[in-house]
Structure formats: C-alpha cells, structure tokens
Amino acid sequence: MQLVIDSSVFVAAFREQEKDSAVCFRLLTQLEQGKLTAIIPVSVLLEVVAAIARRTSDVELARRIGSRLVSFSSVSFIDLSIFRTLQYLDLTAELRLAGMDAIVVGTAKEFNLPLVTLDKEIQRRAGETVRLLSVQDFS
Image (cartoon, rainbow, N blue to C red; front, side, top):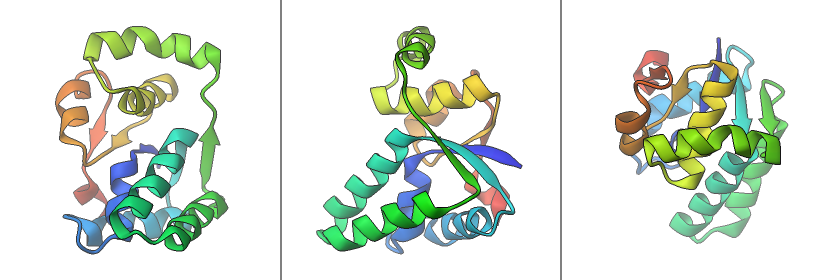
C-alpha cells in the first residue's frame, strides 16, 4: 500500500510521550521494512526534524532521525516546485489550511493516495477532499 504520511505521525513515532506513539512506530517500522511505501513532500522531513529538535532540545537526535527517514528506500520525497505550488493554490484557499498542511493534503490529492495524519485540523478540513486513514489501521 502506498500512502502520504504527515509529520505528526513521524513525530509521534519517535516520541514515546506522544499519544499513539506505539502505533505510529509500528507504521514507521512497516515503512522501513518496505511493507508500505510513501510519497512525502520534503517539507514533512523538515517539520519532523524541527519538531524533534524543539521538543527534545537534542539537535543530534533530530539530525539522526532526519537521516534515518531519508535512508528509507520505501519513501519517495518530492520537491515543492512552482508548478506543484500552483496546483495546490486553490486547494489551500478552499480548505483554509496552513501552508505546510496544504502541501501534505495537496500531495495526497495529486497522487490520489490516502493520507495518514494525527492532525485534527487536517482531518476536519480535508476529509472530503482526500481519503484519510487512521494510524490505528496499521496496528
């Protein structure tokens, strides 16, 4: 199965204090083992590293996590080109999403893939635009 995965899932997977950490880590393990594949905007990688660094004050941990995610052969990272940005403009305005959230939803819509997120605002605003899956679906 191929997915788009939001940064909230990765952050929860790497932080035991986060709600749903264990199930998010299982999803991450399936991704790392190649049982799942994902298309992920590079902005998600930046969000994950930033969130880990902010929440733990451990810059080296954040860097290691970023490097680990980049090493997954089952993940294709996509750039945010001007062409892609233009495709996402209407979606962003219609759903009134924050910029980074719009990129993740736009990616799911562009590639017609389900989106996995813990972000309640994305779930509320994008549920009729893209197919949403729960992390619980991967436990």
